[in-house]
Image (cartoon, rainbow, N blue to C red):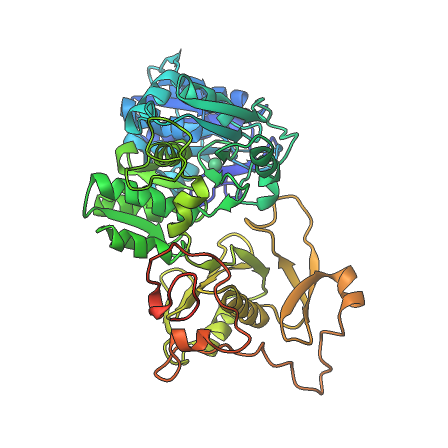
Length: 567
Ligand SMILES: [Zn+2]
């Protein structure tokens, strides 16, 4: 019988094919899924991996043997599964391993209406049932092929109608994933000039990993946007449920900024609505939601938490730092494509008052570029997610808490890991559930403060000397070796993590002799208090003024005026 313990994760099933996940396992899971959901009909879709179609067929065989009729949608994206499950009102299964390497595959499941199935909401029951023999139903179900692509595209185009926008040139990097199928259909006939990158469906990912949260996978898109003089670039992950945006300057737009932009659009339609954001999106997100009359609700990181809060609050929209965007009108499920349509709509049909002098497109109010449109949503400097491998997650977190909690003007909470907040900076340090990692996200009003916060926390988490680190955004892809880094402290006091082979040449010895005292942490930065206000410490010698242009006329927090440094 199948042994699923190693491949059942918090939100889905994922493993190496065929060692951990083969057709027999998929068939057992299909049957168990029907038993647990009690479904009389289910829908299936699969991505472009070579193992996906056989696994989808096997899953369908198991489901049919358990008595359910199977609607087999063939190739599709994960958000297309949510559309099908929502529109047809039936449970669904998507065979995909998202952005994971070619040797992996997996199964994402949902109940009728695209309701999530996670480890606490049915997946554990499915695992238990799939691990033992199940008697077939007295009357097996049927398997019928259906086309979902046209209905999916029409549905999204009705939710965000961009047929009347000014013409835009868009580079899309599908990463050889499912956006290569969905984007041409969704964009068909719209005023968009599409420049496709890697639209060939190829589960071996011959060009780059289909994981846009890693900046390395956005380089081709950034280059193409500049070469093509495009208005923007879009990148999707392997199963095309996540979307990242590159502006006309070729710069990566933070998903927090996209969250804020979409929130303002949703709040314009529905004043006073609730918008969900996870606790590591930018502080700008709740600020902007409040400024537009909405109610921000902060959640733990993770698919199931954000979906649960969306439903609990009837929230109109939710966004995550990872490029997942959730919509109430899309069955509270996430769709990167719908987020992309919102960005195109915002850019292509701006409101009167945003007229740019010398507008080039007759009949439209503005030729504002994407970077101009988004400038007001980009307020702080963020580290991105930095992973550190630690032997004891709890001990390292406790060390950090002890170092920060008693500082004046600092508050902490433990909604998810440890969040430490002050007036002009915050950070969150949370453990990975599956690997011995601590994930750090930090943000501050200035680059210097952000770097100081980051370096002090990393200095505590990664003990001086040999550290086992993995600093790539999104973590180490499965199957790749760990890089051994050494944490070094420069004479100026900043911490840098070098590959071990370089560090010995570039740095002085980093592990102090046992007899000497450990190096002090990086010089502390001022903490806002009664005597040190955010604006006063910004005037400190050596702390540069804000290096970025701000929107003219907007009063910054802490009394700092835009563009002109401290007030
Ligand atoms: Zn995905």
